[in-house]
Amino acid sequence: MTAYKFTYFNAKALGESIRMLFHYGGVEFVDDRVNFEDWPKIKPSTPFGQLPVLEVDGKKVVQSSAIARYLAKKFGLAGKDDWEALQIDSTVETIHDLRTKIAAHYYENNAESKAEKLKIAKEMVPFYVNKLDEQVKKNGGYFVGGKLSWAEFVFVGLLEYLNYTQGCDIIAKAENLKALRDTVLAIPSIKTWVAKRPKTEF
Amino acid sequence: MTAYKFTYFNAKALGESIRMLFHYGGVEFVDDRVNFEDWPKIKPSTPFGQLPVLEVDGKKVVQSSAIARYLAKKFGLAGKDDWEALQIDSTVETIHDLRTKIAAHYYENNAESKAEKLKIAKEMVPFYVNKLDEQVKKNGGYFVGGKLSWAEFVFVGLLEYLNYTQGCDIIAKAENLKALRDTVLAIPSIKTWVAKRPKTEF
Image (cartoon, rainbow over all chains, first blue to last red; front, side, top):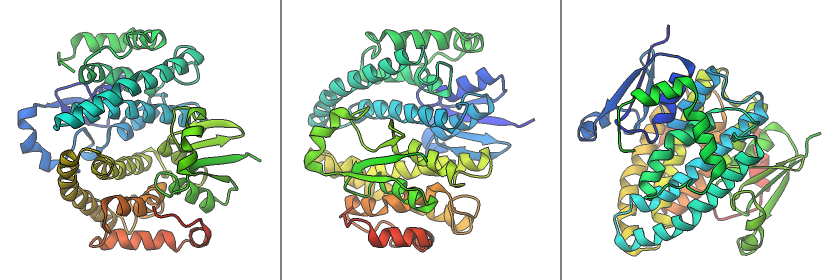
């Protein structure tokens, strides 16, 4: 049996979609959580000074989308053919574009620049959310092909972090995305995991 | 025969890896180039207000990595199995992390914040370049598995843009990455394309 160890901060953010995929697939893994105060000690031992890191039988791999896609293939969540895989990949990149708009102001130290970036995010976040909401409406409640894919786990896994860093419920008016979130959170394996996972702010 | 139309700015940047893949695969496509002054007119007609856009028999798809991965699968450049595909995907995400560090200062309007971000990039760009250079050294002149993949096209396609926006030759001291670039540029189909492609600054 393959041994998986998944190392990320004690947060949902970029790690939660991967934890959700493991639970969905029913595959055991070590849920290794780094406290923020321990990170400077651990950072030099990671391949690129970043988390997440997945160890597969001791071999380290990095980058959240690459790892999530790899697991998604094992669990039948990466599309029925290359065309569907393309739509899923494209959606995931767009979700990360949305994340980047929020991160731009959230992690900005300069007050003037932060205000400018927040202004952009207040325009762009609803733009992306509306587009994604329309996409879900057109695709029968899911992002692609009327069925669950790893794009849903990326979105729902990131959502609390996005809300926290943007400072509001970004999908408050997006009925289709709210229904998509509820669909994912109602999957029995995900429901069980969410009920027992460590409580973190984002 | 599938009809492909690839729309991007008249620049290499995020579009060139995709053009290179089409030429490598010997597949005809319309190389549609938008001048920067025409962009505001065209922007609302794109799915997410962004380029690149690929039309496949009239169906529009977006996001550069998703598109490049889709073409790479057709041309045998996406790894021999899921494990190799993971390494390639991970490398591409890391190349984009490198790009993001440069973009952070290049597109920053606030002078103080720009200086701070340039300082970070001056530290982080060599860090990423060294790590990628070591990876190529360990993998027989390529990023993954001792053979060509779409990660090479992403890197070489972006390189002039990265150099332009960082304001220096970022691989000046990275012998393995320089050799990798030369390997890619010596592929006959790529050599022919590079000789005839429109001249652009980045």
